[in-house]
Amino acid sequence: MVDYHVALNSASTLSNGAAGPSWTTSFTLPGVATQMQLNGYLPLAGGALTGPLNLTNATATAAWSSSPVLTMELPAKEGFFKFYNQLDDSGVASGVVQVHSPSQAEGTIPWNWWFSGKHGCLLNSSSNAMVAAPGNMRRLLQPITVSAKDGDWIAFPIAFSSTDNQHIMATAMDLGNAPVTACVKAGYQPNIQGFHIGLYLKDGTPVTTPVSVTVLAIGVEA
Image (cartoon, rainbow, N blue to C red):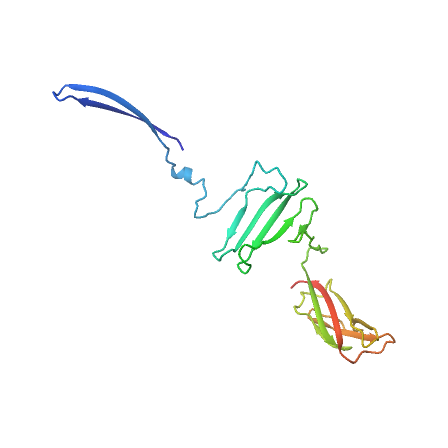
């Protein structure tokens, strides 16, 4: 936008009709953007960005200082999603995501996740690293506790998408003072919906009285 420089020339007339003194006043008007110039800006009401957006804080050099924060709020009270870049106490930058649900009490600390530039992993709100699974498929972990006897069917709470890379680990409480071995029942193939449990005493006798069984099933998420 270009400012406009204006000069006003004024003249006066005396009471007898003769020409009086004249003068010139100069001032500057702020420029008004043309439509072509406005097309290069994102309206406050929103629009589409076709290029990168850089949010920079040139003074963010101390530990725990951060870049400008990009916030997306919901009309509900205390409901927001934020992400920004932050320096840790070692001066290493990490990406931070914050989520505060309206169901959380007002003023409580939001959920945080750090994409750690120092450790190369995802950290949760407790600064614990999230588990990484091999491959590029999403894994689902399902803990199950049921009362069962040998040969019973145990259903997964959520069916897996396939039996590929499916793992089932099971343990059982003792029957009285007798230890019980838990496993996938021999001769029965697990499927995406569940499996048959095998429960045996130390001498190989099948357990016919229900005992508490804990299962961890891991597979590809549907």
